[in-house]
Amino acid sequence: MASARLPETFLRDYGIDITGKLCVDRIAGGRSNLTYRAHDDTTSWIVRRPPVSGLTPSAHDMAREWTVTRALAGTDVPVATAVAFDADGATLGAPMTVVEFVPGQVVRTRTDLDALTDDDIAANTSELVRVLAALHAVDHHEVGLADFGRPDGFTARQVATWGRQWHRVKTRDLNDIDRLHRALTDAVPTHCAAAIVHGDYRVDNTILTHGEPGTVAALVDWEMSTLGDPLTDIALMCAYRQPMFDTVLGVDAAWTSPRYPDADDLAQHYAAVSGRDLAHWNFYRALADFKIAVIAEGIAHRAATSDDTDGTAAAAAHATAEFAAAGLRAFSR
Image (cartoon, rainbow, N blue to C red; front, top):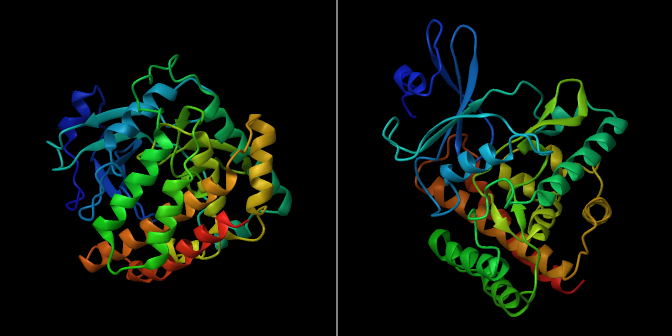
């Protein structure tokens, strides 16, 4: 939506009345799907579409966001109400979802975190773990998501998929990436649970109720969601806690702050709330590091194709080697 224009007829086709002039503004933050706030004189909506370049075959799938948010309405997982979906991109030239605007607070940076007390952060941590466990507890058959993914063999496919993605986006050869991929391939667990996974879970992918950091009003950014192994979600949440993730995001991230519990405490908190055994935990942590390394390289790749809107994406390349090394260390813990 480079033109920042959304035809009123598209919304009206979904039964939405427009009052006054329809305006669309880009929302800053994040390096994945592009997010906009559309609003008329009385109502606001959130519009999301893929980035204009550097697409990953599965990572920017707008149909996933539409499908999962519709299915989770009415469950214990807080989501924005799905409003409209353009699957073939006829409206804007790319697939697009429209959901209700959920008012609240997004804690993205250390500055945002400064407004929270230690008790606020403790409450927020507990709520984040609760929501993730609630997501993993949803019966995907009951909510109509039985065909949302292929949980059998999911973890092995993750290793293979992210390995292929590395070769799509790499800007150089890195021996640690190759070693880590081989180690992951050799260590894939034989059995794993099946659940709806978010695929990108951390505090800044939630909207918190204003004045209540211990309440998630909506879990957002569902483009990586599928049916898969729930331990991949909590492992990625933990891996994101590493300070070098700031380089990937291009900001001093709230989620990397030492004010939040460390990764081991988070994992144990999740195990207690969810009742899940953290078997093969070193593998899952190493896989999470591998994913972030590839994501960092993808950001650098997009920067090389001039899609570096804030001038900091190229720095993400420095994090690739660090996360690859972290993944190798995870196997030796």
